[in-house]
Image 1 (cartoon, rainbow, N blue to C red):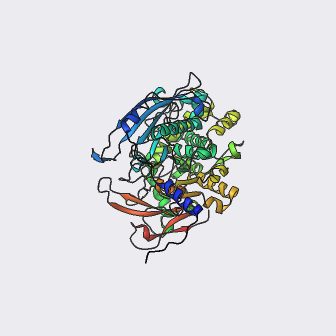
Image 2: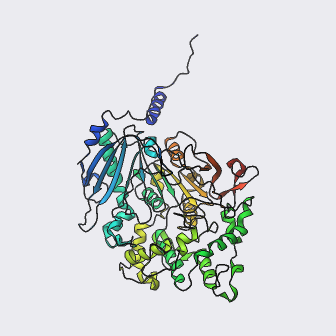
Image 3: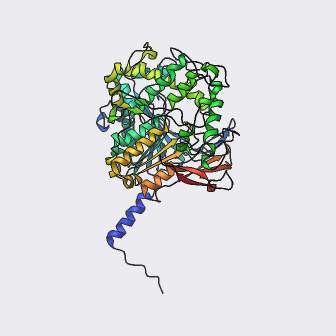
Length: 570
């Protein structure tokens, strides 16, 4: 007897058919070489760009052959598929401004989606869209290898044109500052979509933004300013309150002209915070997981040098203790910034001596540097907070390269501080238009971040909940916290220096959430993997949704199943 299927209405059948089609990738490009060559020399008129702009032009379009993953100089180089590499620029309106450079990569086997990569720091370097995603594990396929058209930009200025150690010099030009703040990403997005349509014959079904740090700020800015243009955003350690952060940088650094926080004291501080907080997560392993409960437990006063004057790496002077208290206290303004913000939150304690960046300790890389701060800043030895904070005040606020930041008072520049805050800060909690069209946002904060405070992400999430309610935010937003991760994502035990799992792919969960292929993501498993094939997994640990943390429940401490996400109310 033939199997009888239940009757399906015409409307239901059409819906099912459309849903299936929406997930089916477009057919491969029939003649990729000729289609790619046809893009060379193409122009996109300013009228096709959704902001005041010059026209865009394609300088080159070259078909790049597929390449398998290889090991080169003991480092793995990921595989790339056959793709059309497009290099172009967007002309400025101001003849004195630099052009916006961009790169677009169009795979011959396209999944129908596009991914915009975010930048970092002060940008000024072309983001190619061909690098591993932030916090990716070794062996994770590149987005282009998953079928995404990918693109990025230098944000409208070239760092090579600035004096050494002066990455903020571009901010003297109003258009270049506006491009860095928000405009370049929107302009390049519109140009990339237009070129994608010319290459494939159709626009992307979904456009995502993926960035960390400054790139995380860019992602949030896109959701706030251009909600109709993006379907999903991953924002990792975002510099949400740029203005507050860079003022806190200056506050943290100026006192070190009188009493430098010697880099050799970092292990002393790290041990004290670990001694106070390590066991709060059920396991003494040199890892501070319970990031919220830790704050009230740390007391560095017992480390005071006799008499309060510096006596070497075994103790902290009164000035150094005051600096540490300042870092872990809010920075307050006497006037409001954009969206009514009046303060920047304190940094969290923990993992001060984890590695962050090329072999630099976390606290050293960002706060103390390897030598006392100087005027002008020495990029080779300065803490990054001084390099960045000094540049921002001189070029964006005082607009004077020779301005002595040690004398800076924001009250003397109130109007300019508020003006730059309106340009830069992504603190607007009104994501109603983004949510209304089904937009999804995943934010990751790293509790051991010394570049920016994870508390700012917590505050922004609370602002969303206050505006929309918990249920609505849960339907569109995920905030994860990696407790031991530094700004760049890595972490290690304070006691035995073993690596801690911090690697996680957030693009696939975002895509499944946006396209309705799976349930909304809950906790995410972080991994540690060997750097070379076959990329053996060396450990796993859960990354919990804020305000939960991974609490050890027993068993193998290197396995995620040995932890449960528990909540400590902030």
